[in-house]
Amino acid sequence: MTKTSDYVLLVDGDAAVRGLLASYLENAGYQALHAGDGLHAIRILRDKRPKVIVSGLGMPHMSGIEFIGVVRQRFPTLPVIAFFGSMPDEFPAGTEPDRLFEKRGDHLPELMKAINELARRTPDGSRVPQAISVPVRTVADSGGDFSFSCPDCLRAFMARVAPKAERIATTAACTHCGGHVPFLHETAANA
Image (cartoon, rainbow, N blue to C red; front, side):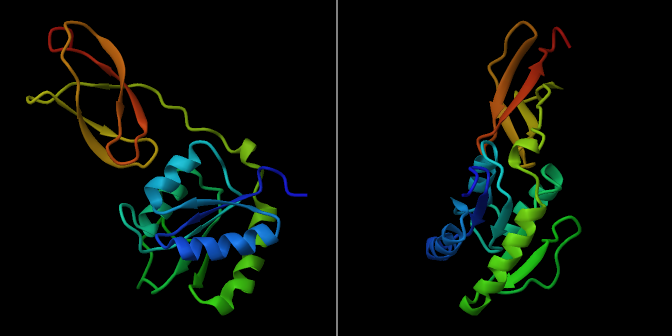
């Protein structure tokens, strides 16, 4: 019987590819989680920790290579398999997958074997430490905008906060993945 933590996260822009892989996974006793791109996958990772991630490389909004880089920084023990249509010339440092498979039907048995092997070596998701967001201290630029780095997707974004005459603690929503970034804002009078 599969434990509820035996998830495999499928990240690919093609729903048919995700559906085919999900069928194989479910027959092998895994629960498939679906994401159409890296940003959607990051939102899933907020609530669930899979045993393995299988990610395409060419996706909208956040490429597979960028997504793998985020996973490597935030969840370094979480194995990632890249499932590609065309092989990139190289993977930038910090974005290398654990395994590579070309998107071909005859590679599915080998892919399933790799998933099983990696899943056996991965601790249960409950043991993966959660990232704890500590409020950052920030001051608005001359136009009243604040610059942030999202702890979830690791992308930079700008946000505007209504000025107040006091020190305030609040959050800003990442414009990329919707993550919440807690921050402490001091007005010019208190800075």
